Image 1: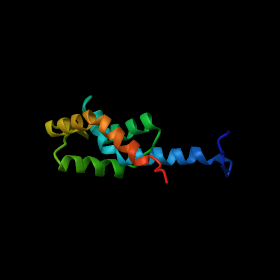
Image 2: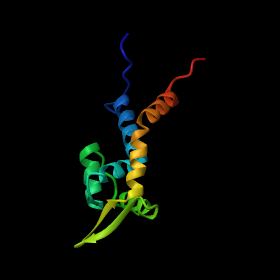
Image 3: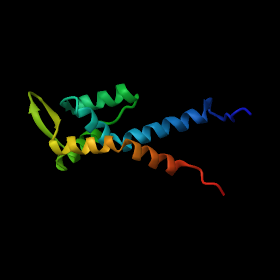
Image 4: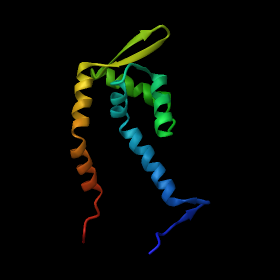
Length: 122
């Protein structure tokens, strides 16, 4: 049996829905994405914006990124310092422990999402 393809305005609806879900997931997990990337080394806000764009093909506003960076800093997960004319963020010990805990819970997170999205039988 062929899959149902719905075309809206010349675009497959499935592709549009998946793109919106992709964008939503990236934005909702951006703090975790940033913490994971900071394990590799310090980054500026501009570096974070570029990374998100290059890795996920998603443009995020500077306001979104800097607000998130300030929040992570307030929570003690990252620390910022001035490097010439830009502020650079590094992972703190608390941030490193937090991201390791999250990444080590990978299977639990996958199972949770799978169970959350399962269609319940009537």
